[in-house]
Amino acid sequence: MEIKRVIPSGYCKGVVNAINIVKKAKKDYPEENIYILGMIVHNQFVTDELSKMGIVSLDDSKLSKQELLETIDDGVVIFTAHGIDDKIKNIAKQKGLITIDATCVDVLKTKEIIKEYLNNDYDVIYFGKRKHPEAEAVISISNKIHLISSKEDIDELKIDNDKIFVTNQTTMSFIELKEIFGYLKNKYQNCIIQEEICNATSARQKAIMDIKDGDVLYVVGDAKSNNTNKLVAIGKNNFKKVFLISSKDDINKKDLIGMNKIYISAGASTPPILIDEVIDYLKSSSEF
Ligand code: SF4
Image (cartoon, rainbow, N blue to C red; front, top):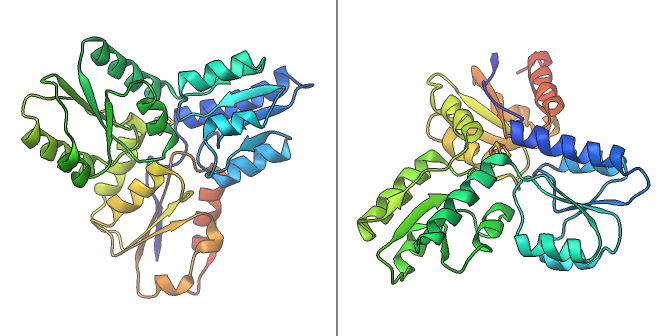
């Protein structure tokens, strides 16, 4: 059995930067309580490691960001790599909290492009994942931004404006994007489309697409991570079996019977240690 790592996979620059920002905050404000408004990046292992350092991730899917913010009154609040609604940022400042923004520069870039089109009287159609913090932060900018997640959403769109700009969440799949943007172009023939998948996401997706001899693909990552889920979806096009695993403990040896070429990829928020453990475990298991 051959075990190969897909390159590139794992941490991207935005994730590394966000985690470093949190660690720096801990050093800079040793006496303060440090809170993250959500998961700094979508990986439970990362959240648990930060928690061991005394950093609290305020994460409850039943509560809005504003409601989560209401639960704290002092200290430092860090906004996650996915971006934040400016109104929430202002509320945190008004509460007297020390605010730190760990939004990825690629997410900020897309937001700036959207703002520019809004300033020029465009309506914006944004392809993203409902309830995802990145999409929520973007749609909070204006009610002229229309979030779509499917063709059905496009069917329901009613936009009374000839000027329409179309773009997307940075971690969508390029296969989906092609389909959705093609469908949109049929409905809004004069729309301007700008693909905004970030380089890290597209490089990880293309690396999987390029593999022609794989039997099994393991994608190491967290089920909450959008870019990780998209790697799984892409892998289904050219692998016999694809599994999303959070660590080596999720590997079921039975799945490997009769399989020869095993590839390992990982989402952009998956710590290197988890990927290495999966590879070491597979390489050392002679009984497959
Ligand atoms: S996946 Fe892309 S947008 Fe998300 S943190 Fe990494 S570089 Fe930034």
